[in-house]
Image (cartoon, rainbow, N blue to C red; front, side, top):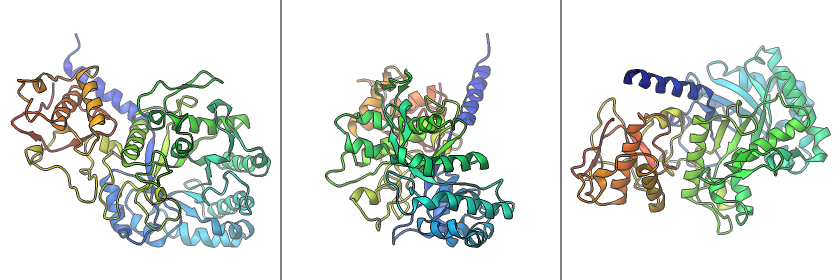
Length: 470
């Protein structure tokens, strides 16, 4: 019989392989606000959350300087209003690349240049014709400086550039854009070894079709899934179906070899009355489940061997963004750097080494008040139920842990050693932690749809002793 140490090694080995095959999570750092922290503090926030990839919407000098020697990779952007100049004047592109890329690279790890943002979208505009010519002149400038092998050029497209997206296997680009824009862009990406950037927002599809699209399907929650009538693949999330619709659209034009990166996706934590689904709970579920899906799973049903690489929108709530209320509430953090809601943001977070979460501007991490956590113990972690989670979410996680999850829930039964304090948070914390410890604290085993977080401080609920291993 193999020894327990062998099985422990095997679990760790397989977990390591899973991490290698998993995708990556980055963050969009928008700055349409008048109350954000300085870039130097933002860089420290990114590092504290284990975020190693960031995307900005310009090439701001202060931001690029702050990112120098941080180890954080950055995607910069040539703004929409400059596409015409870049497309028509090689000297403009040469100067722009020299001033905005070469000046900072390699101290600042610039990995890609986004040519505009969502210029290629539902409708053709006066700017659409400049996208591919601008990509070519910027690429030529990189070649002159011998930076083209390390810095890719692409352009984020809106998923609305698809003429059809359902079922995913029938995905296709809008016919009026195929010859003029899509094919020239895909040719450029293939020739330069780059990838398609695409912005994917299931929120918009759900908001406009909430009577026909399941909320659980939209939020990566447990659901029966949707079977694609074209190829028989079962989709468990709207996000994956939308991504595969883009892959299918490229395949229909014989660009099966191209990769894609989701350069924006997110869910607002607040919205106007007509913005169905915009809420803090739904935002936490969507982004939290997205992170777990990307970091612990494979690719999509259509491209299972291509890791998902995703940039969440956005780092901060931006108070000067125009439009409906939702536009100002996509942030994971308030401008004071405290969490809007509690989710892991990296493999580091899933493993319990991320900085303590903060759920709103008035709340700090749990403290020892007879129902939280006490002083830190080096080298150990526990799984704790979030006191800000909805009761229904806590109960669902508790039921799963004590049932199918195989947690030891005897101590929280009546007359059990940990029955008191008799509260849902206390009982859920014990069950979640039991499940977490039984799973050897492997990545993703303390999540419960965003209702739990990993703590480096031992729980303190009355006289209950939480296990640290089985």
